[in-house]
Structures are given as structure tokens and as C-alpha cells.
Image (cartoon, rainbow, N blue to C red; front, side, top):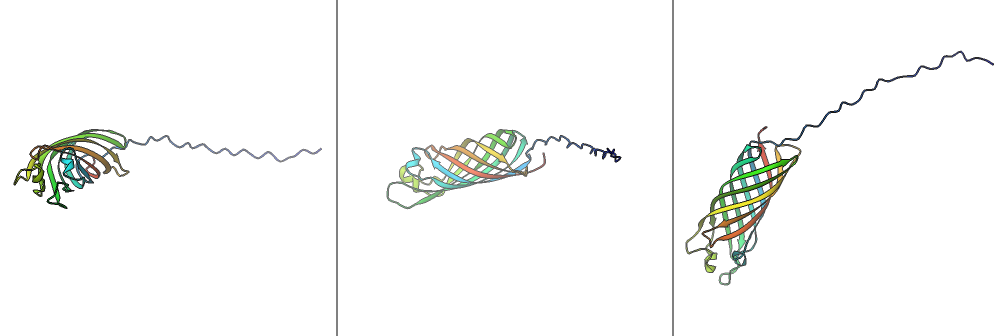
Length: 194
């Protein structure tokens, strides 16, 4: 019986290097000056809805985030609609232009933001085609306008960009108390690091 004279191989012990527990910092959205461009649709409510069809809308907002939860700005929107008034005339279209000032109050939950908005401004209608149904008076093209609404916004990977959905109701008092709802998908860019 022979004794094995070779010593056992030493155990190789590798030092354990644990990955450090690093918490991902919360994603803060940029605040500062912003610009929003949106595409959507405007639909009139009764009584105007029987005389004007739903139409496409384009909108632009420019403003400043005063605080992370409050922003003020200016807006412009334009929509095109087919007049569905009794004949004559037929096949007529008109545009509704709106512009003014607004404010937005909201809160952010990580990448999602919810907001309420409202404002006032001026509306202009491009045609007298709605005179036939007494929505506008002869020669009337301008009115004050008020709007209020809400929306949801999703912050993209780059904290300066967000996409959102907004829905507003608006009132145009001089045009026979015309009421409508506009909805829009938009892209927002915020210039600033705050």
C-alpha cells in the first residue's frame, strides 16, 4: 500500500466582488420654455353640429413652465369644416382660427403627467356660410373664446421630449354660443434643464 506523496491541490478562492447596489435616479422632466405642436380634430356640439361637420385641426402652443406644476403660454389653432347647412349653398367649407393665452396645472407620476388647462382668446371664422342658419350675423367674423380641458402626457427617454393627448371644450359666445370639443395628439419640446 503506497501512500500518495502529492499534496492535495490548493483550493482557489476568488475574492467576491459584488455589484454595488446603485439606485437609478428618478427621471425628472425638463422645465423651462416649451413648444408643442399638435394634430387632431374639432367636433361641434348641438346646435352647431347639424350645420358644421367634424374637421381636422392643427395647433401650436408656446410657453414657460413657471413651476414644475404650473405653466403659462399662448396658443394658436386652426380647423377646417364642411358646412352642412340646408341648400343653397352646398359643398362649402369654412375655417375656424383660434388664438389666445392659457394656463396648465398638473402633476407628474414618474413618466406620466396629468393636467388641467384653460384659457381665453379670440376666434375668427373665415366665411359667412353659417349666416344662413343664424350662427353668425351678417359681416360677423370675430368673437371671444374660452376653453378648458385636460390631458395626459408621457415623457420620452430624452427628458426634453414628451408626447401627449389633450381634450378641450371651447365656447365662442358671439357665434350663437357655438360649443365644440377639440382633441389632439401632440409632441412637446422643453428647452431647459430645471
